[in-house]
Amino acid sequence: MEANSSIPLNGSEVVLYDSTTSRVLWILSVVVLSITFVLGVLGNGLVIWVAGFRMARTVTTMCYLNLALGDFSFMATLPLHIISMLMRGKWLFGLFLCKFVHIIVHINLFVSVFLITLIAMDRCICVLHPVWAQNHRTVSLARKVIVGAWILALLLTLPNFLFLTTVRDARGDEHCVTNFESWVANPEERLKVSNTVNTAVGIISFIIGFSMPMSFIAICYGLMAAQICRIGFVNSSRPLHVLTAVAVSFFVCWFPFQLIILLGNIWNKETPNSIHILLNPASTLASFNSCLNPILYVFLGQEFRKKLIHSLSASLERALREDSVLSNGKGNNLSSCPADSEL
Image (cartoon, rainbow, N blue to C red):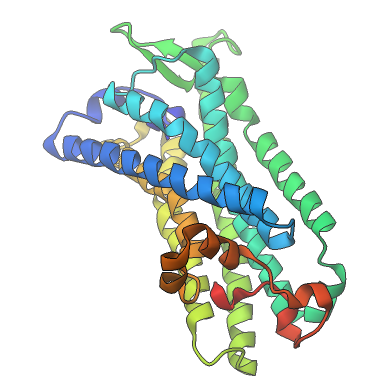
């Protein structure tokens, strides 16, 4: 993620590289992003291949497929961000890619959290209301909800489409930033509009793109944990451990970035240097979540090591496959959901 896309420059391109600490964090961010790109392309590409071409369309596989598509599209933009970071924040790719790349980034941000929330709610409904889930949990309904999530994510990226542009600094270097010059001519009014829009976008993004979905996820996992413990679903606590890992990893990866962006957009010109210094590491951590998803949703499945030895694609297919009981309507109540004993 490009640091300057949300926080105005205001000399930040100097702050980011003017100390030993900032240089170390900058180098570390570039290295981690490069690793994230390789792992993310391979992991999400494999999920897309298995869930999209080797498996029947089910609610679970559709969620995983769209999550992988969003993460894969974001991974495809990472080389441009890495190059921009290596060039000290300069943007070398023109206006179109400035808008397009950052729109992809923000769409993935919202789609990922919406789909993770949807998966949590789907599992929660299966556990708490298995009869209703068996009768009404259809692929058609899931497809409509997923399309709605993509549309909502697209609408939430409209400010980036409208206000992102390329500008040149005093040294003649081009940057991809939010700019209101073409919308408001008066400098004083432009500053007011910039402060208002950045603050509003930061607050809305934090609420809709993080705090509300995270709250839903926590509630769903809490309800599932209580139900699993009450009825003794499994002898081990593996499912609860994996569900907790999913929620905690998402929170750990995204909370620092969301908080820094929120504070940066609220403070605007008064943004402390520490915010600018921490922005690249925080965005790198958030990006790393996109390559973690295949691991969290697939590789932590039960007996994964044994399945991995036999076939990596076979392990993905088995981990993503829904319980066959769902198709024949037999089994106990919790069997009407995906085979989440593997998750």
